[in-house]
Length: 508
Image (tube, rainbow, N blue to C red; front, top):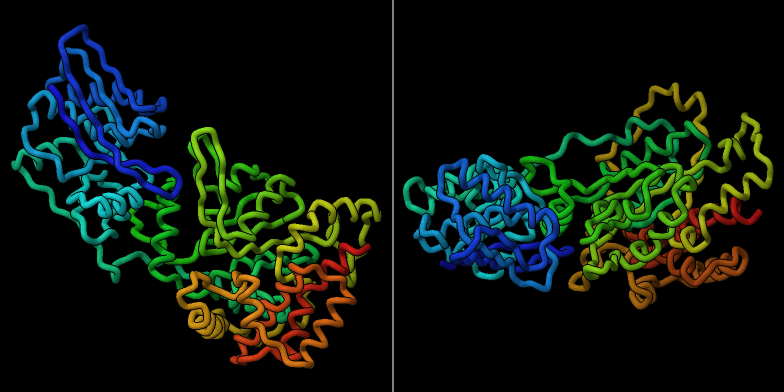
């Protein structure tokens, strides 16, 4: 007796088709699963056996061989419980209906309940691409699966629901999602709550408008974390393509909240400084997305930046530069997108009060140097904007004046992003920070005065070629915020202000 059932799998960002084949022959009772399964897949034998018996179906007392093809890809997780069970019931004649146009995904409990699993969204997208007519998914994965048009999604909480549907006894209703019904996040923190810090707010506005990375340096209590946590409130809305890609990452990582169909707000990830390099970059035998990828299309805020492990900090180099991170393991090589806006914050010294107007720094010169040397030159060079966050004066804190709300700042950011969208249309580039060297040359046209100022600054500050390009991109963003086609002296002058702190703090 033989039967086969369609399923799907995920490796990195890509999904692939899977065929579960069940063969039942005479011989001593035995249940083998082949096809390069991991431990969780091998344990499907016990879950499937218990589910069949506890739901009062007949479990074959024979030699059972289940093959999960293709056999050259490592199978991971419990998502093949459901297709294995359906294949066995088909092979024993307990399900006679055709399942050729269906795919099955789901983990089973011992009493036949179907549990939530990860990676459902990319698998359903692959099923649609393969021309499969319908996919049976766990009821808890209904929200993310229903986003995909052009394919029927049947959510089920128990195997009896699926079997009755296949036998024509009680049909399941396919679920659909309308874009207007997709989730909205809670109200975001507002820049109106931040007193003073006009220079830092302007820097973050430029960073948001151009997608630039930013480093804030200042004593404790000056509002660095407060400012960073309000950045999502001024970022432009995500396109549907960005929402879908971000949701796929969260689905694969198992981080998608229950009943959330799409991630509609830009992610804000805030890893603790004790995070490992693997936690930041991603890892595992079959690599899963790390914090860098989970911040894709959004912000990753790294507070107490020097305190992060050096390997963790250095793992930022490739994703900041390339917009993706590649992880190599014995099971294969996967690449995850990591188009992030990095926002880092640090104190100027171990005690935090170097350069403070009223508090005295107690650190030795050697201690200050060791602290700053925790951030390597290549990482510092990859951060576009460096801004000093100074202590707020009492008069500013006590002032009754209303600070500019995030909504007003966001309007300017949106206008600048719209200019960039039209500029880079059809190129795959989304913002000024991601411009290629050729684009930087083509779109960053300086006036004669601006060019002379940039040349003098380049020679005086000893900037690298990368820093030169970043200055041009920052100036391009400032010009976009002001609606200027060309880059003028004022734009270059302002951009230079945001590339000088590495000379102040790291040149000693």
